[in-house]
Image (tube, rainbow, N blue to C red; front, side):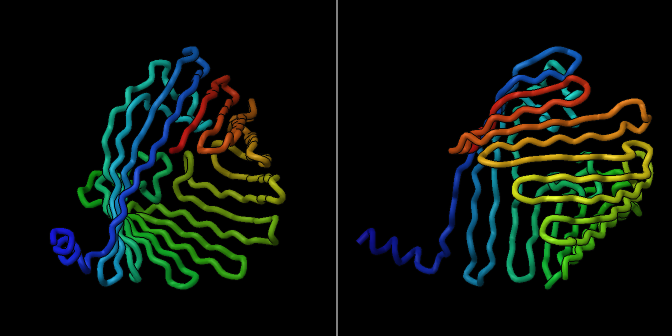
Length: 289
């Protein structure tokens, strides 16, 4: 009788899904100045999703992180201090509702600003929608915490058809970024980018990229006050990935370099390493559960 009553009470309720996933990193980091240190961190994420009777999907996630806060991006290696910042945080993210209208994401001060490469300014609400060959993203900073330059809103439009992709990004701070890319064939892509607020001033970048059978390469020429040219080479096969990027430092006195390597051990574990021209490096392992 109790079992029958429970079945009747839950009839018509859409099934919900809750899943757990985790990640961990550990290794040795040397910023090229302060000597080597050990780093480690771990995170646990609970992802929840469901569907309404009318077909809307919704979800949320909760992430708990602990350990050392360390940025393993090759270009930022020299900025990591020898005494790593302790990381203990609990964050909500990706609270969303989606349907035929598109997708709405709610995450107070947790959405990367479309026009902020540094990631220091964030948005609160985001809309994503696809209309044929056109994809649109709109963002809003509800609490007004962003700087005037980054603005209270940002917008992005991507149109792709017949091998041509046009991308335009702007915000209420009157910044804009536009890229036109053309796929010459399955291996070669050419693009031109203009950024009204580049690394130091407005910049134009012309780039040609090649990709075939695990081999990648690109050459980019810029007219900004920093890197005037950039050459990238990469190779990936059988779980091994190696990439190297070389660029002129803007003063013409030396060549900057970022070299990365990783090997996938399978089962969610990989070995990763990187170094750059400053002598900074890291070597360690990344685990996914």
